[in-house]
Length: 146
Image 1: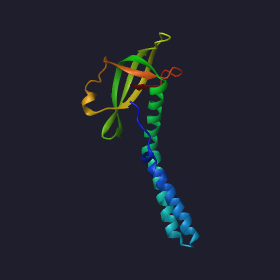
Image 2 (image 1 turned 90 degrees about the vertical axis):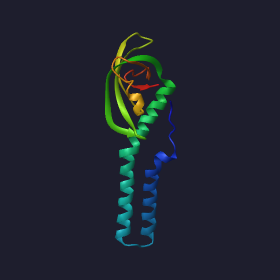
Image 3 (image 1 turned 135 degrees about the horizontal axis):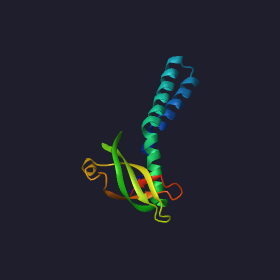
Image 4 (image 1 turned 60 degrees about the horizontal axis):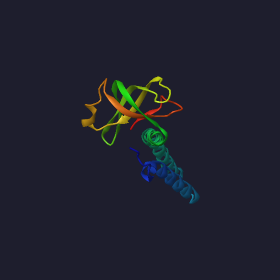
């Protein structure tokens, strides 16, 4: 499942640019330091929001999309299941430690895959269960669930 990266993901950065543009405009009008300070602080907050909340999600989505295109599918067995503290659209992120056999080399590989699951799907994720993953042929420890 590929996810689309859209304009909405970059709203905090665009808001920061607007705040900085307004600060420059207000500075050109000869305004005092208070509006400049307010607009600069607003831009800093928007940039902080982007890097704390949106950037990790964008990085995850880019990696998952790339692995869905170039990744090699393999059957994996779940070794360990743990819930992280991250959520996406009220779906918790679950980190799975999986073991699989590289289809081309026959080497046994242990990797960690994390994905967001609906609450009713979490019950089927238990040690010993099998699932299909995709992994990077150059770096087999880089995996995503397919």
